[in-house]
Image 1 (cartoon, rainbow, N blue to C red):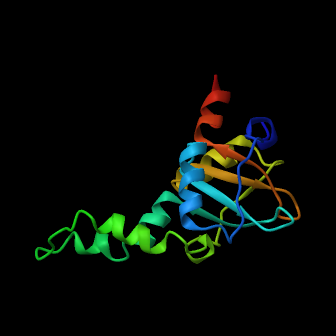
Image 2 (image 1 turned 45 degrees about the horizontal axis):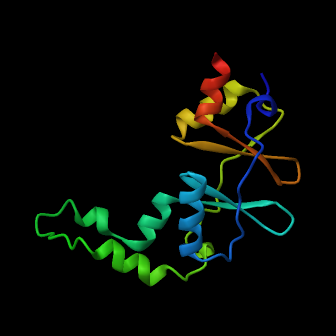
Length: 144
């Protein structure tokens, strides 16, 4: 089966200049763990995830958790998120995005999702424009 037959075509995507605060609202409203970022022509230029935002708010935090001298400040995440809330998401997005073509087969999509531990895989056309996304549930749904 081809990716075009299983991909989700009803997409939410954002541009690189929206603020972190707005992205968090969109991620929550769309119930998505990550968001494709496109330019004015719809070309995929990056992806940003909840994990990227947490990492941006708490650089080095997770490494510090492994030290014996670390005493957590439970308001730290809230404080740091407030500090970056108005930053454009371009500062924190991932630009090295793994993609797939609509003409590729579902086995390739499943292999990439499993090997790269992805929640979803952007589908782009020959010009790099975002045309869909293959989610893990899309693969599972079509197995039935």
